[in-house]
Length: 114
Length: 117
Image (cartoon, rainbow over all chains, first blue to last red):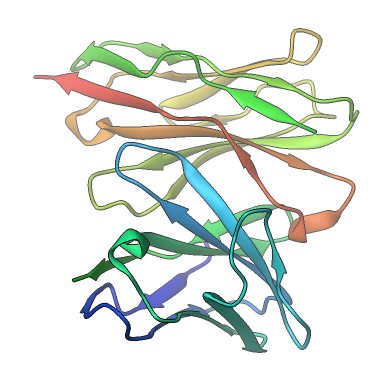
């Protein structure tokens, strides 16, 4: 299957700082990628759709000013958590269409905000 | 809006035995894709199997097969000869076929499968 990478895999930051998470498609190009948030033992919650060359589309209830998404190229999307607080601690996952029919997922990033 | 329901939060199976994970969905669309993803303790989401709604034949991938009942809107996953490495959380997901590969997935709540040695 197609390969998606995420960096970093784990990050710990202080409250009030910003954290950037990168999502790269290694063997395919993607005009659209998706960002999810997942709490332990729960399903994936879609946060936003990242669109190459245009603004991201956010799901209802997701603060666009807190979760900044940039899709700078066909292989890179970034999620920046701004002014992070402990309640932003979570597991963040991205995905992209590795083939015409299927989404492939990155390994995820565990964010801990102290 | 589409919904995906996985009503069993947990299941357990003896190693080498067969287990079936249930999934139902609701949609008014005629063409769509259904998926089973596996999330082991590493939390990497792995595609297990994919079914296209317009195909009547049930998809199979080695020890994994589905029972796709379009009229009943049911999409169950059968794991044969269960192995310890099958222990994971399994998610059923739906995607519309009308908006292409960029359309988002709708996930069920997931089911945690444990495998007893």
